[in-house]
Length: 262
Image 1 (cartoon, rainbow, N blue to C red):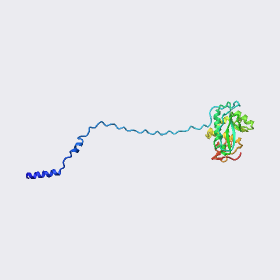
Image 2: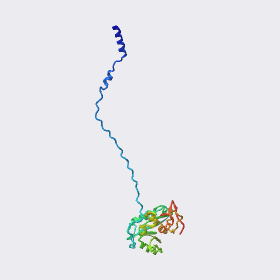
Image 3: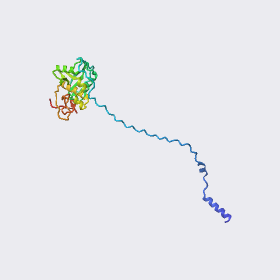
Image 4: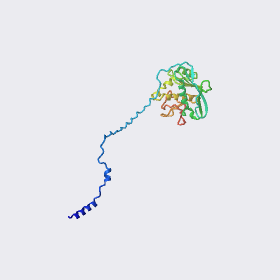
């Protein structure tokens, strides 16, 4: 090939091959940066959620331990203060609350339990025709609710013509005109058939308040209406249940719960 032909070939190749891109080469790093020490990766381990421990309520108190004084002084202390009017309408009956000295109970706690028993809409105010209010000693009142030792209860009930003895012992509570008399033995110990059925002492206390106040309001004793049903509050639940279930309230589901007259 002649020199002129070689020159022509080189010129053609130069036209086909593009020039190198020096600007791109200048921007690219000539080598990778040296690797530094690798930081440890922290892994957070979630704290396991503790399984909640079931809260087991304490067993109900069925009766109180310890000796019960059989006799007190025969004199009474009275709860102070004036309570709220209980009930929405009807005749207002006022009552005092008293405790025999030597009964070794807290008078204010006793008064609070009486008030709570009578304030419940399932109690006698549930009729809508009765209101009740606790008043202090010295105020005008219609009746008094006493907590007395067994022997004093026997004496007070006998004066009203009521025999509370069972097997020779002063056992039950009673009502005399203007006087609701609660036996300290029953207030602290309940009764065996309630205890064996695991009926809480508070239920028995509510029952005996409503039962004896029911007598003061003019209600007589009633019988179990049918086996397996709630006992009427005017049933003598202190002595027996006869197939009924313990019940401290005269009104259930807004209606008077009663049984056949005894």
